[in-house]
Image (tube, one colour):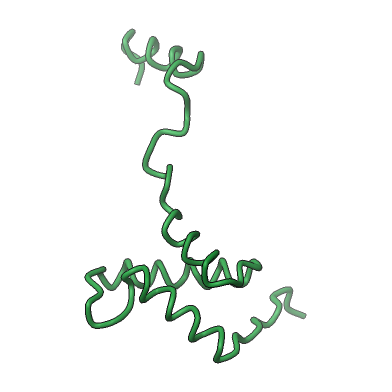
Length: 95
């Protein structure tokens, strides 16, 4: 017996809402300038958010707009002892 549960279907009203969110964020429609990969990633992200209980248009739009916030920045504080130790190790020739 498989441990994978069957995926629940999303009703047409919710599909329309997800499309609307993608359009509002610039990932759908004639004027969308996002690449195919970016559009696909946005859809996968929204689908995941929706299945995790994020079910309102406003909440999904906010989640989509802020999904990359902080991901490109180094999450570690600059003055942490670990960073200082790593910097010192690299300065001393560590690889």
